[in-house]
Image 1 (tube, one colour):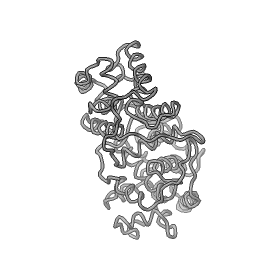
Image 2 (tube, helix red, strand yellow):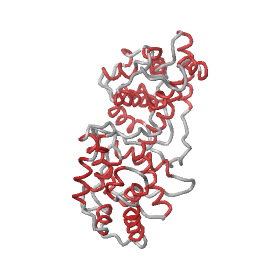
Image 3 (cartoon, one colour):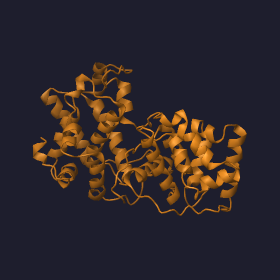
Image 4 (tube, one colour):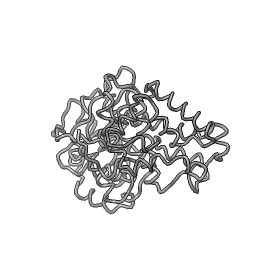
Length: 362
């Protein structure tokens, strides 16, 4: 897998849902792979601005979806989607998230085609080109149509839709410069709703949140699903303390992209990501190191299921105790301290492998 990084590595909620629906469609039809045609069909079936640029009427949308379904029966596609596959962390991670969300019990999930991987990578590049922190449906559609040698373009050609014309209109469409809604897995989104970010008045006050969830526990509460997300993206079979460290870095990137920070009540106790960043530790570098440190999953868990390593829960509990003893909110600082205090811990090994003096972090 390539260890190069793309400028943009995240997608909007609509794109995440379209990718998941593409996997579900391929599973339902028992097809051997998830290709650009499945993603195009998912976009047409939704209500995105990009879909309306491509097929402005219900009739046009239905006609193109009909072509995709008909060609899929008996495999009448001209293109086999065997483009050289892209294996970088962002593309592979996003596809693994969609696969996990679509996976049902005992169901075999078909792999994504090389053409789909290439299209998703191009969508992330288009997002960066248009100055958005995440790829939206306009960028995804541009990515699908970037190459004339895939099934998405073949479907357009069968419907006599000019690929170059659609691409040109998408490039200047207002939606191409909109970031789109963050995905449901966005950690910063949850903190925003709780009112735990600067200048954000959430549904609950900071004091009430602390009373309901414990001393700073909301930060830990949102980091756990983010750690799971990092494990899924890396193809691992359980959530470990290494993924918890990645979650701290991922949250920092999400806050930076949104131009937000922790509220004053939490800011002073959540500087771990900043301290790691000053030592050259980025999410991409740490994820690359974790890829080699944690073994790959033999059996991928299905949606709604993902085991947590016992050490992870112990670290979270000890971090909360440390915060209570010190009389500070349980933010990322006490969490990092406990991650590094873990004997033979994965988080410490990860940072040491990146050349970080962990004694200097405590």
